[in-house]
Length: 503
Ligand code: ADP
Ligand code: MG
Ligand code: ZN
Image (cartoon, rainbow, N blue to C red; front, side):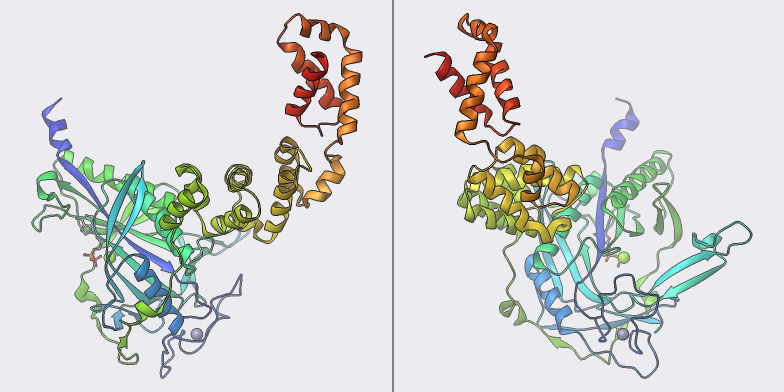
């Protein structure tokens, strides 16, 4: 090992995340405008409050506070006696008031934690704080068309003008700030997956909504000796972290962090300083570029939001119930239904899957239900790049298919390989597929006749069977399956043939 390599081994990657999640309340956080907008025309879901018109007054949405308290319970956070709102002042066209209403010195959640799995191990990350705030509007930078060139959305540096849409302005956000506890990009991604899972279980978040989770990723390279055994980083650590802004996917977070990690390590290797700065992630190139030197807190001139009185929330924690969370549910599935660790994890990966599994397990057998939900249904959905939410309205049809299997009305093979697949590809219900493909299970008489025929028509194979040739029976089973159009059960055909041949 060279001297340099030894030195690099002594440098540790340190990562902390700031995550903005949209809370799925029906209305915005400080006005009555709906947040359920589908593909609404720009600026059609606005009012004087979320447009920041002078003289309009905000009214806090109780549901947003309830959701925040639920998140606090799920991450085991302290919820203070009293929580307050502040104004964070900055000028940008997506912020019509010139300030964002957010929380500052008394956030609704502090000192929480979340366990997650990474590479087969359980890890815990500290949650420094989580607070409520309003989302700004959204901007679209446009390049003017001329001649054959279409008018299109471009980066800000190439734009002729910018359009602003305030439909999003005032959507409730929770900003969740982790401690700098991650040591590699992949770890941060495993955490994000777990966080989304928990938020969806709580029913406060929808990961399928565009832009519902945005991440600012902080990364620094720190000498190992500046990190204490408990993970705290010494104050005088020579760590100049960078903050990469506005990453909108898990994959984006991973590549932005990986890029920053190698960029900073390369600078250090060449004896250069890492500037403390805010950087922008370029999703297409997978790279980060310098945006501005980091703004300091004093730049925002925080002061108390006098239009919203302080809020006493300490007893809400007791009053508000939260559903069983993924970890607890996974353990219960293992105990109650005797599932393997792997099956239990798959079946609790989303609340919809877990609910569906429990519904099926109660009606039929837990093992059969596990095979059908975890392996067959999720497997086929995954193959088609679909999720359970894409077939939410059709769960009854899948239950009907599982019933047909449980009651022996159709063979397992046909159910898996034909009916389930056609249900997903054609959108048909199981009865329609069975009818169309003639898959109803053959009755006993029909199978017996096919067995007799197969024996009569293949005297050579029968001879081979008696001479002890192993493949002969498989050939005969194949014949029977063909005669019954695949509607017999191969295992019992095998038994019937042997019985007849050994007579
Ligand atoms: P700011 O308000 O300036 O963004 P904070 O102290 O609130 O700064 O920290 C913001 C984020 O930076 C947190 O997610 C935290 O985990 C992370 N962070 C703090 N120190 C480091 C570090 N040395 N390396 C990487 N991330 C860090
Ligand atoms: Mg920050
Ligand atoms: Zn409004």
